[in-house]
Image (cartoon, rainbow, N blue to C red; front, side, top):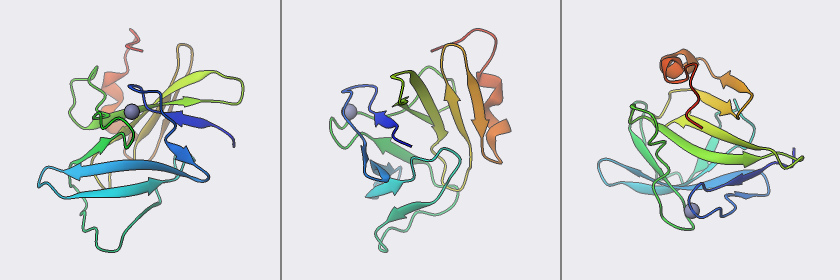
Length: 134
Ligand SMILES: [Zn+2]
């Protein structure tokens, strides 16, 4: 899959080779670089062994290029972050995912499509109603 993942703020490329790169920071002020699989629904990630994030931690995802917080501010929940994905045909999707470590849910959304992934995807489904916010 040759999809590009870009920051909604600076449009910078977040994917290099087989990883999406994020700067992350917990509410306790711990920060780390995290590499996440670009395959939606695959929740494996890489970080340095010294990183001690635990399940349930609220992790802020920050663009490593422009340092903007990637919070999906259009939702009432504080637990969702968003980046854009551009597929091989140039079509743009929003990829919305949970910021809570251990919570597996991702939503791939465009004007005319909606796909939910992960065993916790029911958690935030109520935010995706009839009226599109994208
Ligand atoms: Zn950016």
